[in-house]
Structure formats: structure tokens, C-alpha cells
Length: 214
Image (cartoon, rainbow, N blue to C red; front, side, top):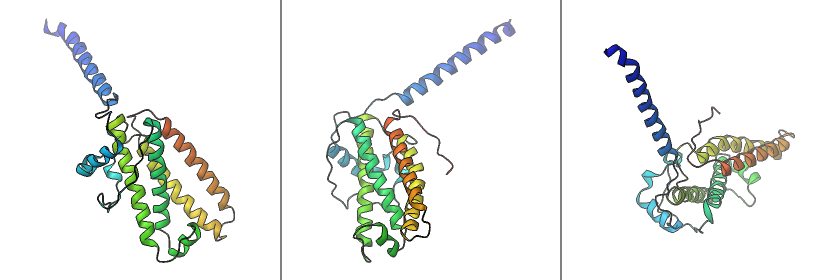
């Protein structure tokens, strides 16, 4: 008698497992902003009190200081504009980080007006760009529920970081005439970055990506 019930019990167990799996997926991908009325300034103040909960904590620069800068924060107009400002800030940070890794003589070639001894100014600009995307991502999390680990932003940073480091190296080689063809490769990397940016702007909220093996 019990053996006759085993297929039925197995089917019920499978149905229950599939239900919980579906509900778990639905809750994970449901967009439900925790603070849809929050302002960017309020989000920044919230971040200063609770920066450990930021979804991009593993992407923070190791020596970031949250209380050191007064950011000029203008309110973005909607979710897409917020994403655009996030991408502007992190792209600037990645470029400055790549340039900061070069010798001072190479920085003078790539940054108009840069002179030896201006490293503190470069580091300050890099820190401000990083704080800008960090603040905007926290705002996107609270206002739009548009910030989770492994989402469009992480995908952009993972890939754009390697593109920008190579682009900066090629730009230096082109200016120094080490590689005359490097100028065209720089243009190609700019095109790749533009395409990557468009993909990030259009990606669904809370969709996770697998980190590429770059």
C-alpha cells in the first residue's frame, strides 16, 4: 500500500520544491524600492551611517574615506539618469586610477595641465569620483531598488576596468610613438566602452551576471 503512494508523494515533494524555488526567484527579482521618496542628500547621509551595507562594498577602494569630501550632489531625474550619472562617475574613476598607476612623466602626456608634484590633486579627484558613484549607487538602491551585487554595474566595472587600463597603456604608447597603430586601438576601446555603457543602461534591474574571466 505504501509503495503505491510513493510516486504520489514524490510528485507532491517535487511540486512543493518547484513552488518554493519559483517564489524564491520571484522575491529575489521583484523590484521593491525601500525608500522611493528619498532624496540624494538623504541617501548620502544614510550611507555615512551605514556604508557596510552597500551592495558594492567589495568594489570600494581600500583607503576610501567617507567623511573627507563634501560632494556636490544634484538630484538625478529618474532611474535611467541615475544610472547614467553612476556610469559617468565610475568611468572617470577607472580612467584616473589607470593614470595614477603610471609614472609622473607618462601622466604629463595623458593629462592636460598635469605637472610633477600634482599627485595629491590626482588622488583627490580619484577619491571624489569614487565617492560619487558610491553615493549614487546607494541612492539607486534605496529609491529604485536598482543595486544588487553582480548586477549591471558590477558587469560594467569588471569589463570596463580591463578595457580602460589597456586603453590608457595604448594611448601612452601612441603619444610616445612606441606603437604608431595604437591610436586606432584606443578608438576601438572607446567604441567597446560605449557599447558596454549602452548595455548597462538597458539591463534589467536586479539581473545578476557571471564575472567574466578577463
